[in-house]
Structures are given as C-alpha cells and as structure tokens.
Length: 354
Image (cartoon, rainbow, N blue to C red):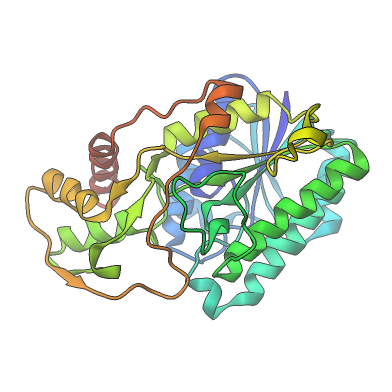
C-alpha cells in the first residue's frame, strides 16, 4: 500500500511512518518542521527514521525536495506546508496514494489562546487541502487526527463518541471538531472513507517537549519545581505511543464503511456515508499526582510542586470509552504507565546527553 502521512516530523507521525515502512508499505511523509517546540526533537525523529544522518543535517533540508530514508528505501520525506495547495496537489498527482493519514496540525490547547491564526491556517486550510487532494486524485481511504479536546465541557465519564461535542473550550478543540464535520461532508458527497481519531494524552519516547511528562522530567532532573495545575486534581487517559500507533495502523487497514443501521440508531460516530469516529486512548485514566509519583519513582527523587489553579482551556478529566475500537478492530492498549514513563526517561537521558 502507498500511504501519505502528514506530520512525519511530529510525535505520532514519525512513529507511524517508521512502523509502516518496517512492515513494507511505501510511505511518503510530509511536514513543514515548524519551530512550535524544540526543533532538535523533530530533527532527532527524522534521524531515527533515516531521513537525515545527523541533527545538524536538519537545517539544510530544502523545501519541497524529496529525501529517501537511508534505513528504509520505501520511506521518503518532503518538507512542505499543507497550506501550499499547488505543491501538495503535485504530490497527490505524482504518487497516486492508496491511503492518506493526516496527522499534521498546529498542536497545543493553550497556544491557541495566543496565536489563533496558526490553527486556522494549519488545521482548517491545511485539512481542506487534504480533503480536496483526496477528492481530485481519487484517494478513498482517509484517516486523520482529531482530539479528546473536542469533548470540552462534557463532564460525563468516560467520554463516548456518542456524546455531544458542541461546547469546545479552546480554538484548538473547535478546529478538530470542524475537521470531523468537514470529513463527513466529503464522505457523503464523494464516497471517501474517512475515520477521525480522537487521541487522548499521548506520551512516550520522542514525545512533545511542551507536554507535561517532558516538562516534569526536565524539571526533576534539574532540581526545579513543577507547576501542578488544578491543585493536582486532574485525571488523564495517558496512552503510550506504541499503543496509539497500533490503533492507527488498524484504522488505516480497515477503512470506514457506511452504517447500515444508521437510520434506526442515529449514532453520532457513524453515518450512511463511509464515515467513522473513534476514541483512541488507554481506557484507564490516571490521577495526575500518581503520574508524577511514577516519574519520581524512576528518577529516585521527590519533585517540588507548585500547586496552581486550572488553566484556561484545560479540562479536569479525560477518560476514553474505546469500546468501538475494541469491538471493530480488536484494539487493546497494553502498556502500563510506570513502564511507559521508564521508557521515556531512558530515552530522554540518552537523547539529551549524547
């Protein structure tokens, strides 16, 4: 299968590209490599996947040029903005993809309060170009990143894909909800199979430096205090990166189909069109203070904590109902939090001390 993966310098995208290349798929990766967070981590992911040979090589990647992995000849990378419709469409026309997995997006809840236009450009305009690429070049299998943030003010746990998601509390969440609506329109009008994945807090080696695990470990190693929001009364469905990738691969291999019973059930997550929404999480939420304790266990030290009120755009709890993903695709996360944290810290110590 020939697959376009966008966001391949990102956390999930780079891991997915590696997994698919290892199993023999032909993978074309696209990413604009922006500097939203420490760009060395993005270069490090590309180096791991064989796209560049050193972190320094990342600075010389030319825009819209094709790089072939030195480790996997079936993996190629192109530095490109999804807003660049002309060049994106040339890739669609040239490569003739069997499937597209769109993981490129401007991430971050709190950053959307400061720089809202970045979210419109990347998450709305960019996703529109992906949809149009699929329509104009006859790609019938599209999966894409949504987010648990769409649940917004919903306080019913666990979060179900059948719940209302009409009250987002950040522009980031609103753009992800918009993606789901846009995808349904294209499924209905053009018979494109679209599957939206509402990711719950993803963590693990090569993770994003703006996420809590990265910040907590860095502070702990440097003997600095950490800010613990909502006075620690947070619940998160932390999901290890390998478990996330396994779920995404199963979705790519099983495109959405029309729901034959939709007229009777009116299920929110399905449609008479080939459209589906899944939660993809651990289905086992962890208290934030327990998460911090697991970090302290691995570091062998206590971390000083500044207890803070909840931040704008944050929700106190996330908890994924993944029953649809289990029933349809046999998906079952398997990595305990302490094990996942240990692997992350092992990676962190190696990457930043080499």
